[in-house]
Length: 343
Image (cartoon, rainbow, N blue to C red; front, side, top):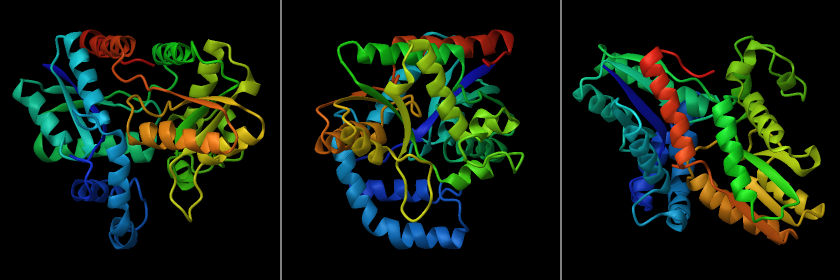
C-alpha cells in the first residue's frame, strides 16, 4: 500500500526561550546547516549562539505566533489535510526539526498499512540545508526503524510547469491591487560553500555570474541556479520586464560569505534608487514561517520605508491555497496510479 510523507522545516512548540532553545540546538547542530567539524559547531552553536539567540528568536516568534500555534505548522497541517481529501492514500506530515518528527510520521503511515512511501520535501529548490537534510534524515529513520518501507523521493520542483503556473497565479493575485514599481524575489540565503559542496562535478559552480546560465549536471543540485531559474520562469509567465524585477537572498550568519545580493541591502538600495512601491515574494518557501512573516513582511517593510520607500507589500507563500493543493494532489495521485513523478 502506498502513502505520502510531507516534510517541512519545523517549529518550536511555543514562542518562549525554553522551547526555542532546544529547537535551535537541533536545527543549528545539523551538519548540513552549519557544515563545520562537530567540535567547532559545538563551540559556535552551544558556546556562542545559544547563549543569546533563543531570547531574541522567541521575541520574533511572539510577533507572528497564531492562536492555533506556529504559522508554519498550522499551514502545513491545513495543507496536508486538504491533500488527504484529494487522494485515497494515507498522508502524514512530519518536520525535520522539533517535536513533529519524521519518525512519528513514518510510524503513522506504517500503522495504516503503508509499505511504500512518497517522500515530499516541501522545498521547491534543492539545498543541502533544506531538501537534502530532509532526505538524509528520512533515510536514516527508515534504515533504523522501518527497514521494510520503500521510500521514493519527489525531487525539487522549482521548474515544474504546474508549480510555476500556480506560483505565478498567486503572485498575480497578490499584485492585483498594488501598483508596484519593483518586485523583489527574495530567497533563503545559504553559504557560498554549500553551492560548491553540492556540485557533483566539483568544478562547475564558481558563483561568477556565468555558471548558473551555462548548462551543467551541477544544476540538478545547485540552489543558486534553481532560484534564478524559478525567477526567470515566473517572469516569463507573467510577462514581467527585467528592469522591474530583481533577486536577492535573506537570512545569513556573520563572518562568512553567503549568496549575494543580500535582501536587507537590496531594500535600502532600491529605496535610494527611487523605487517607492515594492512587492516582495519569497519562493524558497511554500508555507509562510518566521522568515517570511517577521523578517520579510515586518522587518523588510521597516527597512524599505526607513530608507525612503513609500509602500511595501509582502505576497504570501502558496500556503494551503486550493490551487497549490490541487497541484500536489495531481503529483501524488499520478505517482500512486502510474508510478511516475513530475519533471
